[in-house]
Length: 586
Image (cartoon, rainbow, N blue to C red; front, side):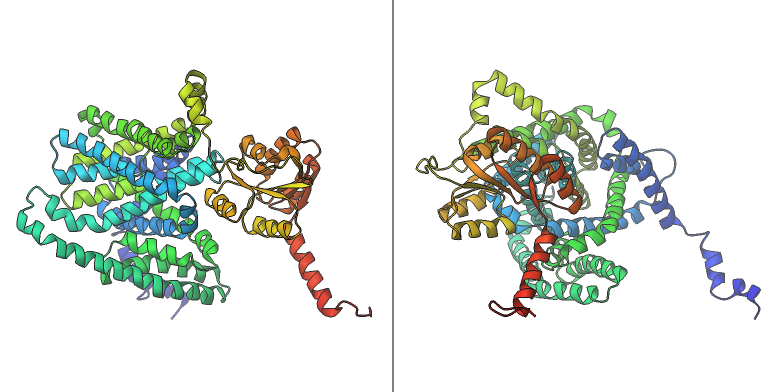
């Protein structure tokens, strides 16, 4: 057969005949991605989260607007994959240790705030004449903020690694966990919550609830016992091949496969299955690589998720129900914010923490969309409710940047005009200052150690063994509590706040050790320390060779680099093996 005849072979014929006729999936993805890129870029240029552009792209290609209409059924299936990968990412970054570090404020605060927001939203929906099920789902949708939006907002303002940032993230992690439980239980209670729910159905409900919880428990136990051992080992085997594409395929297959298997075998949601797949994969030493390798695919399908959510939106709600929309947005921006601030203040945290947490919760996002879609599918939430939630999400996400930008001026204005605000801002924290019985007035050679992570802990132990007086400053309250129980001098506080170094007695210190590899923080702390104590010597942990060079050049401080310390230690160990003490040189 000649070379030219290949184009008419049996393989080419079906391709030539079918490709022009069925391109619905391709057109949905192509138009969805293209429009999301364009509107996401416009949103970013307007200093709005790109997520706003993705939702608008969905509205443009949805049935509620004229012009091209994408296939909603295909978009919904693509959105399911987006939900799986979104929840997989949440599980992959979920840290029990980080949550436990802020548990005293995040767990009770988030649970009470959810209850308050649900009550406000349900009362509003009940006033509109909606049923109990619709009112409950509506309140739940308004109660949970978007983790994606929060992380971007905190990262943009350099607050992600601060004490206030960790509290806000921990708060939203608790909200996410509560919503995962709601996604499991809502279908079970749907029959009782629907207008036609009757007493016999309610009487037979508890065995169904028990059976559902038993299946969920069986799935969780399976994942904790088998998944914790299997996933890290599989990642190790695949990583040992050296193939990057196989590693990425393994991560994605685990996320989607476990989600699908959990739904089929244990009858739990795709979201819960993917969440636990991410949690189990976090147990592997390759978890950071798994997160990095899967990020582009997770981002791509997350875009399709938000586009498909926008396709469900009917813009008519903007002019048909403006009063309802204004009330919904008011609950998100004002009601939730004030409730969260009040709870943080009641838990005896300072005013700036309360304002940061309040601003973090002044929006709704991905979980609200998932819950709204489930509520409509279960015939609990009316279509108008879903439209209101989508419109309120668009507005609250768009306004969240302005809300965060206003936190500083609001705090300054409140302190300038209110004695109560000044007292709340300067609220005494027992961990923010040393106990009254600690006297350092005659202590020579004091060391202030900033950060008590893996590096800081070892340095602290070395100083203690050498009987060198040391004060630890860290922004993890749990860490400071543990050190206090061990009778170690330590203070808790925001490391960017000069008051933290002041309470650590930097003015009397001979040496400042900064173990947090953050160049911005190192510059900030060095400036504060030298202003209060010009004679103090500074030794810092640099994140990279280039930044170490700049820190030495600009600040004139001593800088330690992990690679150099590791090389020195390994070289000394090799020399000790080859030339034991007392051995004659070759």
